[in-house]
Image (cartoon, rainbow, N blue to C red; front, side, top):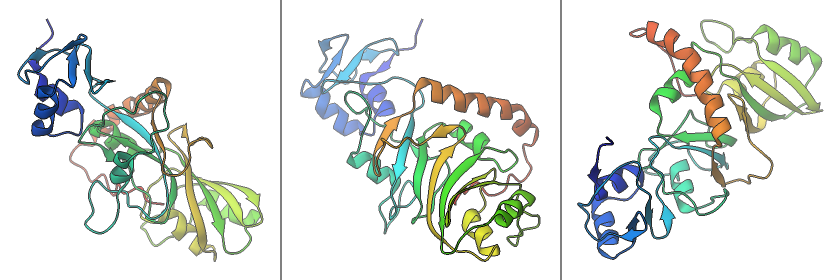
Length: 268
């Protein structure tokens, strides 16, 4: 038998609204359970019930996964006293999926980070276990960046990236795959997430990054149709792809419990 909980608690757990905000909406007749208007915030519901608020169905799934096209100028954080955060931007609007935008969980956070001036793919979730496994530096989740440089790139740079670059850490960077697209433009795929890693790697090759955009992470690709500042929910296929990678690392990660897992900043 499915556990039943109060309607206001259920809505609080699955939206960004506070209990007091929810109680006002319930009292105003804006919430339906099984197509019946419910005005009692203490009404008991279960995960099997079809619940709507203001005509929008509340998704009862435990975790949410969003793909956000981060523009430059906002920070990859849940809260910031000075700058707009990626969560501020997502909650402000920009939904580009089908139908009505979903109510967002209040405990969403960015899975990894991008520098303030870096654009591109950023996954937001409230699945902390998956995020930790995918971002752990002990594992090799691929992240691909579109990079523009101040001076031309060369085949020698491709070789240097594949061999590993000394960026002042204890070890060289892990082998990175570089594909030249134009005279000063390339794609770079790395499997680490060290602080300012892409910029530091090219700096060591005598070049400066003038534009950086993440276009792919863990097999999830940023499509051209998703414009800057827009977001959508991950598809079931994309979520499964993430879970497969995370589950494949779970056993190894648990065996490393108590050891230093390093920096999970994942900033380009």
